[in-house]
Image (cartoon, rainbow, N blue to C red):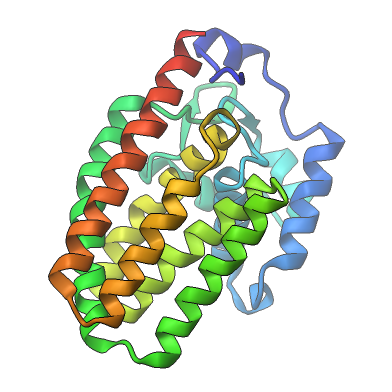
Length: 251
């Protein structure tokens, strides 16, 4: 079982000088669409944010502006702007004379995020149910099929990516920009927690059953039932993930 870094562990953690981390960040950059259209601070922000979300930069990793600027092939100014923004979002913290450190996943923080997201995801699926047609339902069913294939292949990282896409697609179908903005504020932390704990949780067959039930309610145009199922789905996932995170911290 993996261990979530403690404060002492952070002092010993490797920084970006690890070549494997540089390679993973380079691969990530190649997979981000439209990156060249961003201004440098936004480009740096997206790359570092996704590197933290995808656990390329794991909890406890030290991020030095100079090293990150070299990896991203830009000056330190946009990198610093990106890191300051990520600090306000709770993804990193500044340690004087050391640099920025990727914050650990904390149970209290996760509990508060899930309290918000459970309610808002329920609202999103209710709104989406009123607006979706056969095409959108087909897209959700396609994602569920791909999740089943990922589980058959024991590819849990791919399953987590598809799970994230399933929930984001429903939020897209709600067609409410303000709702999307609020949920997006917290989605990275949830994805990071799912990815960190996925190997230590039971295989998520139950999640696929719940996804199918949610889509069935959407197809039947029963927004209230879809909302109840979505909130129950998120609540079960919260309890499961928090249990693993607590064990990781204790061990």
